[in-house]
Image (cartoon, rainbow, N blue to C red; front, side):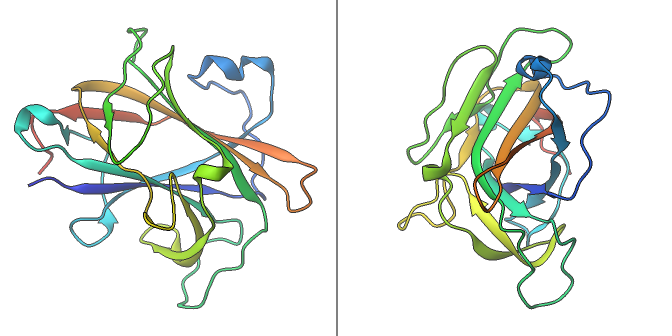
Length: 207
């Protein structure tokens, strides 16, 4: 049985910039100020519970695990109540997912796109979405970030509320570097948030 996952990304506009940046993504070497992007993996199939980036199932098992990306505004902190969390007013304008093999390996892309997603094969392999692909925020509860937080889905549309999903197509270890740009309410400032998890895809699912 395949499992559906969310990668829940959280941006906090009150966070301090990253110091002594060691980001794996080469384009950040231009000296641009980076902010920490919070990241959590959620097992949606089994009740929206926290999960781990170890041994996703890919196609050789005959069933492929499925992945969606969600973006949360967590600037007001984790919301423990059932009422909507206070949004900062900042909005995502661009998200890019990079994938490279670790330890200096060749460029690689572990996903096959589904329901209309486009994959850009470049070096490093990248998937980019702009504001028209992020839809409008809705109030969503995350097991990590709390209740009723402002949330955007990649590839969201009126006919596809939860956005695009991707299946795992290749096994191995991947550095899944994520870049998220958010814009201030008045449009005069942008900030770049980054996260660099290592993801494992293999023929054996994690128990």
